[in-house]
Length: 313
Image 1 (tube, rainbow, N blue to C red):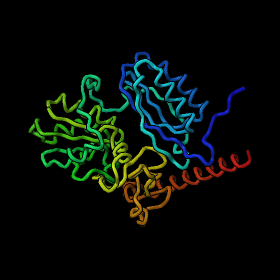
Image 2 (image 1 turned 90 degrees about the horizontal axis):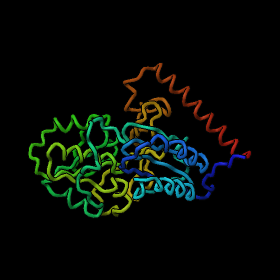
Image 3 (image 1 turned 120 degrees about the horizontal axis):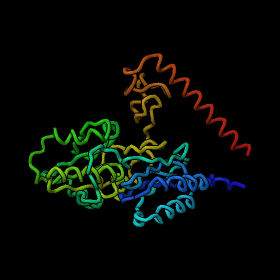
Image 4 (image 1 turned 135 degrees about the vertical axis):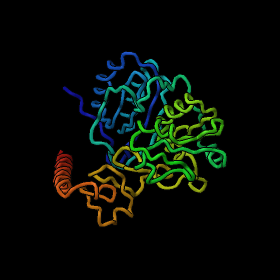
């Protein structure tokens, strides 16, 4: 008989674990089936990416389920020292579990950039303010423009990229001529900076730093009254964004374009739940919005049916 999947108790918060680890995983394809099976057994949802260069993902589930999956990952040769960051959600932030095989666990698209060969110097959250407050430091947000749009560090440069693949081209055009200047880079959880700082070092920049644990670790550890963070931090799940103390913030997700929508933007006449927002209204047709409305109604009906089944069980 198949063991029923475990789910968090109704009065217990869902544990959300963000993780990544660069390692040389030869034969990573063979890791996928047992990982997928364990996630199904434990009721874990989210995404795990496996590649020859390591593992990356965000998962959610009960305390015991997350502990079981992390133990399984750390038993894999090369992942023994895998670290993770935890937060909580009042409900499951993912709809399904995906364990995917990829060429890169974070896609930059530049051959021969190997974080295991050398990255920028890690800076603990407690020391980050001092570094980025130095007027000689060039502070770079390595995330994409829709993420930067709802929050970033004071004084940070926005490369205005739509995907991480565009970042190397931005560096080439940015014109940071003095390669001895301190460069401080940051991203959501730290993984993009592993490749971004390795790329900068490969280009000859001498003093490259990145925020250890990313924005999430900073928001978790640095008191709000001491923080230089402004706004919210976009996360890739149904929470949409978090703020200081990793509390869920007020942004919601536009179901038409997947951009975060601030409370101010939700008040716009261009915002319609499930159909449009100020980010996408003028780039979509009315036919598109009719299709999005239908999809949204179907999604709401499926959720209602799922709730009814759970109440009857």
